[in-house]
Length: 116
Image 1 (cartoon, one colour):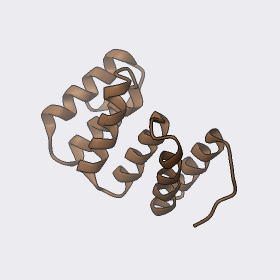
Image 2 (tube, helix red, strand yellow; image 1 turned 180 degrees about the vertical axis):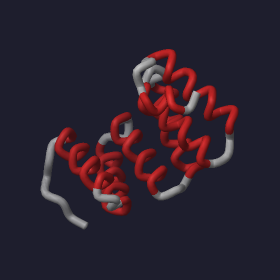
Image 3 (cartoon, helix red, strand yellow; image 1 turned 60 degrees about the vertical axis):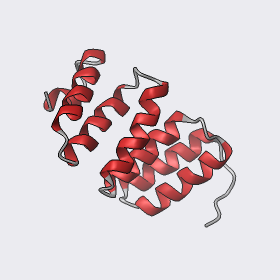
Image 4 (tube, helix red, strand yellow; image 1 turned 45 degrees about the vertical axis):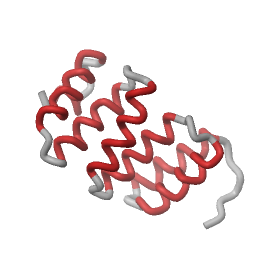
């Protein structure tokens, strides 16, 4: 699929919109296109994780979120999402560790607080 040229921020917003509409295939396609040009973009890796999570691909989602957290250990949303992916895959211990770390960094984050 071809998309008009857009800034990275516009592309991220487009992916967020696709995910909000549950259009996982479009979100992943756009993310892949972004990563072809900007393979180190952590926001796109986070969005890949969200798309994989929405598609119930727990292990792949964990890998995407871990990619972000390894490079940015204080990425609270990636940590909380990593916890959710582990929890969805039935891995309680790594899920708890991720939720606890996210909560330490941002106690107001509902996703982390809810799963403690």
